[in-house]
Length: 105
Image 1 (cartoon, rainbow, N blue to C red):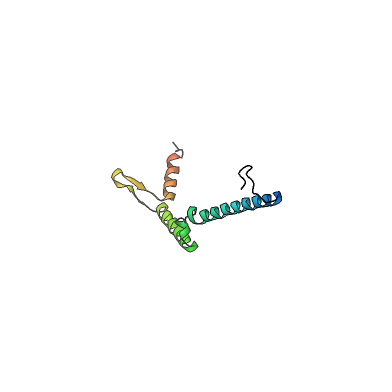
Image 2: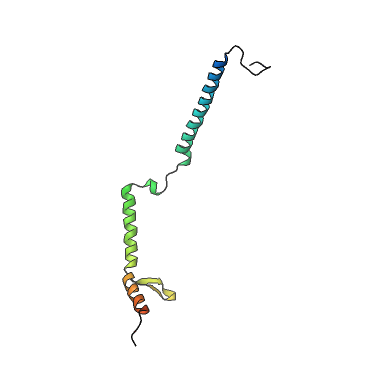
């Protein structure tokens, strides 16, 4: 490199431009490759659901829905020491409707 004006001696200006463009493209390519590697290996971690197969997720969802349906359609204690019970949803709606309906006098 020439110390006086910062140019490469003996190269024509068109070659200098081509060398600069090639260096810039190589830099962009290197950054792109690093980003792809970073996203693929470092940033993307499988979640619990992602580690399961479709059938396993379906079975888990079915089990949760069955458990919810059982809770909605059965009697049970929520807090026995406080006297709080769980009623089937249909019974609870009927009681609520009966309590709020106007009574005939």
